[in-house]
Every structure is written in C-alpha cells, then in structure tokens.
Image (tube, rainbow, N blue to C red; front, side, top):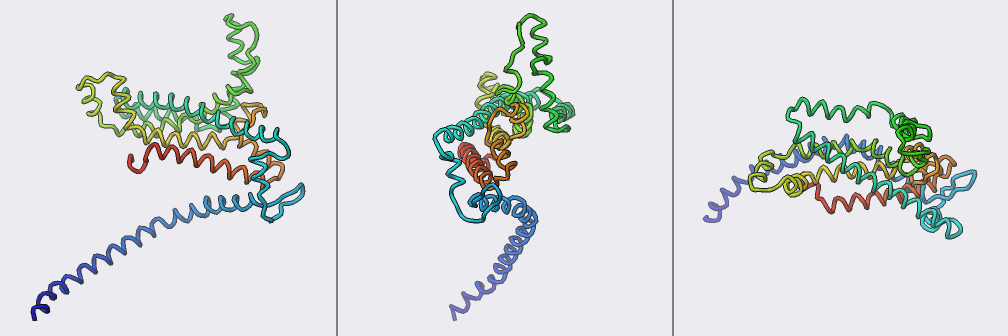
Length: 313
C-alpha cells in the first residue's frame, strides 16, 4: 500500500515531463527545417562541385579526351613533375611564389586595415561620419576588379605618371622598370583589391569594444601603446582572424590579378589552373585545385587553432 502511495506522485509528474520532451523535439525539428534551405544551397552549389572536382582529379586524359579511369598520375605531376627534376622545381617555385604573394598581401592589408579600422572606431566620434567614411572605403567595389587593376598601368608604366614625375623632379634619370609587370605591381594590386576585406571585420570587432575598458586602462596608468597591445588587439582577434581568412583565400586562388599586373610573366597556382583549363586539361587542373584547397584549409586551420572563433564570438 505504501508503494502505491509513493508511486502515485511520480506517475502524476510523468505526463508533464513527457510533454516537455515533445516540445524540445518539436523545437529541434523546427530548427532543422529552418536550416534546411541554406543547407540545400550549400550542398548543391559547394559540396557537389567540390566532390565532382575531386572525382575528376583522379581521371585520365590525353590531347583529345577525358577518360573516366582511376589514376594518380595527375597528383604525381603536381608533386613530382612530369619527367625530370626541373619540373619539380617549377612546381615548387609556383607554390612558393603564390605563398609569397599571400604573405606580403596579408601583412600589408593587416597593417593598413587595422590602422583604418582603429581610426574609424576610436577617433571618429559620430556614427554618421563613421558611416560616411566606411562607405568611402567600399566605393572602389562599385567598379570591376579588372578596371581597378588596369588603372594602375598608366601610373606605373615605363612612360607612366610615376616615372615621368620622378624624372621631372630629378630623382631618377631613366624610367624605373620594376614598377609594372613585376612582383611589386602584383602585390600592390592585391593590397588595393583586398584591404577592405581586412578593414570590415576588424572594424566590426573594434566597434563592439566597450569604451570604458579603454578609459580604465588609461586610468590604471597604461600608455597608449600598452592599451593598444593589451586591450584593443586581444579584443580584435576575431576580426583579425576573419579578415585574414578572407585575404588568404582570395589571394591563393586569384589568377586575374597575377596575369594582368604580372604581364603574364609571373606564375601562381591559380594561373597554372587557368592555363590547364584553357588547354582542356581538366583532370590536371582539378588535381591542382584539390591540392590548393588542401593548402588553404591547412592555413585556415592554423588560424582557427590560434584563435578560437566560436569562443571569441
């Protein structure tokens, strides 16, 4: 009789618990339904093309056709070269050249982007002026990338404005040859094109910093440099990481900028892939694309290991 009396409250409490479980399951289903359209777009336009690229990278090909037969020769060509050691050196130099442009662009865009974002966030007082100046940063994106790159040619050419000005003021006696169609011009174009991708996330991170923290640091006797390094920079790590991911991924796959500003004389991985596709060597281009994707993912993985974006955001 006692057992029956004690178990009655438990039985009475069971229906509400079951009802809460049903509500939780309903919410989970609703969450999945809300995410389903975006997940479908992700699968159709990203996952499936990547899977097809991976599959094609293992196919054979010749001058006339693509043969759906499994082979690893495309990857051997990427890592070992086709016939001799010189091809290996060419492949290595191509990847090193791409990494060089990536590192230089990242360093310059980070320095410029952090400086501009800091000025907008802490030295521009009104929100209206911040918005106006922020829009000015985005104005170059109203035109094509190719047009913005071509606009550098009249400035940096042998008889361009820069060389003519330097000779007119007596700083040089002859035109400087390395201003155009060189590593300098390619890096300059990359910085011009992609700095805004560093400014936006860093500015968003800085805009969320409580100004009271800055005042507290100054009240505690910290100098401007100490406040910047110990307060502002740590709180901007998510923005720096996101901007770095944007810049790295864009530069690693860019071939138009290298072709236009390098005068078709400077190699990069993206340029190699573009040339292979123009010659209908799709399996070889797919293999290079897969290797490039793995390299970019390793770089992004290293950034996310240094900065836990989920925890920081």
